[in-house]
Image 1: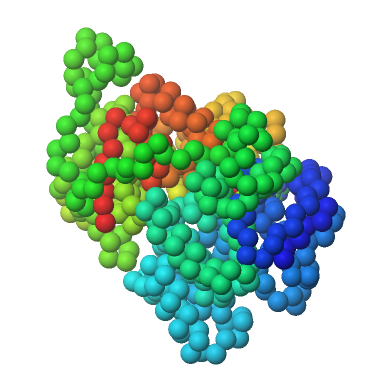
Image 2: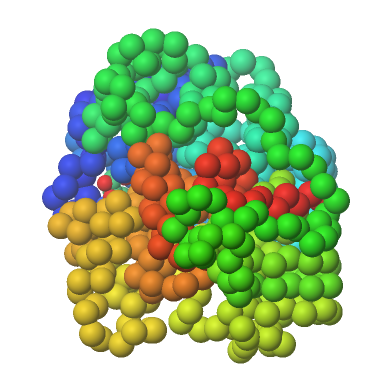
Length: 485
Ligand SMILES: Nc1ncnc2c1ncn2[C@@H]1O[C@H](COP(=O)(O)OP(=O)(O)OP(=O)(O)O)[C@@H](O)[C@H]1O
Ligand SMILES: [Mg+2]
């Protein structure tokens, strides 16, 4: 039994994060914790796991305080950002690590390791360094580690955010397998409508307050529509994914002619002879771990918006790096904004901007203002820094008044992602490359990002977006390149 009595939480800077919450969670129940970015989901998860102590009130798990030293680890938690969870340099060691803390007999550990690796599809990755895995693989590793430890209660903070639809479906089964027996409790934070529907009960947070606590089917009637729509990510109308193709990028994709009214159309109409931003011919891109991606022929015209879709591990990030000139092809040719890419030094610095998949790991500055200014100064010097920082935060959907002086490390994951997006926008680049930009963003933040990209596209920016979220790509892109494994 997990019990929160009058639990509130605030950080040292005096802002209250969670208003007094009372929750009793019976053994064996599956509870979704929903709410928009910054609503307090992670804070609630960490309180239950004993990683934070409440400012007032009490948390108890099976009658004990989960934060007290020496308490048996009854709760296993999966962090929202899997990178911050790893403690070893090998996938196999990572799964064993948790079990070693439980002092299990070596034989038992071996059996559980094999079983967890099989359940979460990690068999071929056991010798890899966890930090070199794809986002989806990292999340599966965290779940496999928890599966092997078999804690009494599971707290999962957005455990599927990096997984595509196929991965979600298949690993949900594995997760269900790990709670077999019926007495294990699952507390699952999520933004996703479909994941909420899996739970028997949903606790909906808004501004640190519980707005609703009850069965998912009554959520829509209980929470005002504007608040709900801003918080959650709606399910796909049809679940059809993009057609599967061979791994090689299709030969000679024919660019669409500009549409009438398209800001990028040539003034005389007809097909604009706009020079290509990116041209890749007969190329092979290779990464560590023996991965290689052949790209027969890909030309991206200036002002075009291209999506890169495909399942986890299909090479979306690899292709994106190739399009930026950050990964020289091992054979064939790549030209980015007129630069022939022979080595990384040939990338057209200052003319492209790249949003990495886990950008928050690259934060340097002690304030959001400093962090975004750093990106601006790197390419444009000191002139007009303050105004451009403010404009970039506004465009990303973060109120400058509320965020300029915050520490970027002390933000929710969704807020961090928006700071990273602002740091990319502030560069004002002609070629924009975004790797999974929607991860961690709530419904409102996604809609704003879509809007922003549509405006940048109309202003002539070339945009390449890699995403497992086809719902986001469809309304945005001129073409989608579908990769497959
Ligand atoms: N270390 C910290 N110091 C100060 N404030 C923090 C810290 N961590 C989180 N916050 C603030 O607490 C509030 C709740 O954050 P929390 O991470 O619980 O939100 P969340 O619902 O998990 O959001 P997301 O969907 O973005 O993950 C946010 O306003 C956030 O800025
Ligand atoms: Mg969170």
